Length: 88
View 1 (cartoon, rainbow, N blue to C red):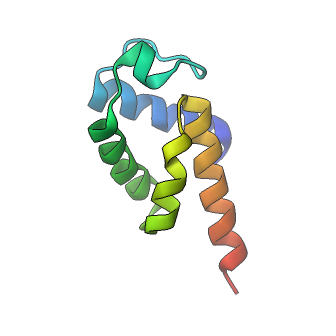
View 2 (tube, one colour):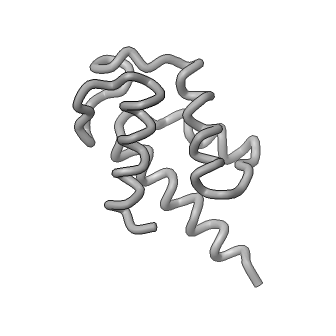
């Protein structure tokens, strides 16, 4: 997926499943949209489904720095790149 496709998919998840109103890529998820730690866990499960693989505990811990949609996109791209490099 391209970054634009990822952004569209993540935005759709945030609007449909978390009831965000017009999320912008640099909105602070908690401050602007009331996103909390339970939401973050649910979002990680949705990201796993989107990516088609299960994230390790370490990978999930790396998600703790996510604050914006752009952070989510950077995180997903890093996870995809890590998986692609690990393939023989």
